Length: 187
Image 1 (spheres, rainbow, N blue to C red):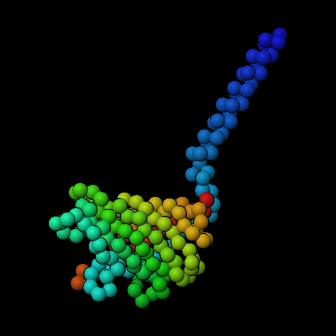
Image 2 (cartoon, rainbow, N blue to C red; image 1 turned 45 degrees about the vertical axis):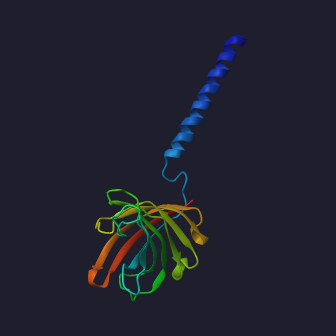
Image 3 (spheres, one colour; image 1 turned 180 degrees about the horizontal axis):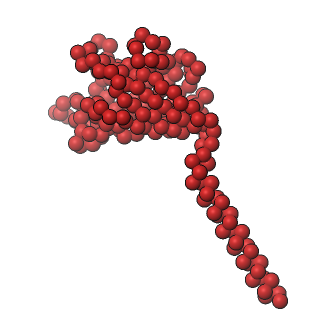
């Protein structure tokens, strides 16, 4: 009889372990498991000048003997562009986008883009968001998506994503407005 009760105890213990494992795995598959906090969405407009005296994007390095263009493998750009509440450059400035654009694929299609949103006005003043991801060449007109990997101040421990789309281009002025739709969750 002791042998039977020991076997029953082992079976119950195994059943409990399986139940704990299943519940644990179910939580990991829940989209809110790791980041169940408040969701925040907002849209801003990056005001980009790729040339002229007020350039906000400048090539700073490239492969020796090769042109420094957005599609030339190895070209590195730095960016310091204001972003505004609305599409107009005259709308209130909310902050600055600062970071890098590295032409990282030999065919010139993709780039590696680590950059920050530094909020200097509005409800997020003093906070930052950190982005990282695989971008597309500046000639691409499709939506580009980046990961939001971190933040500071009110954006501590955030995760999320952002989509970017050029919504206005004036080549004669080297001017592009890019709409950024950001979705984040506080973890």
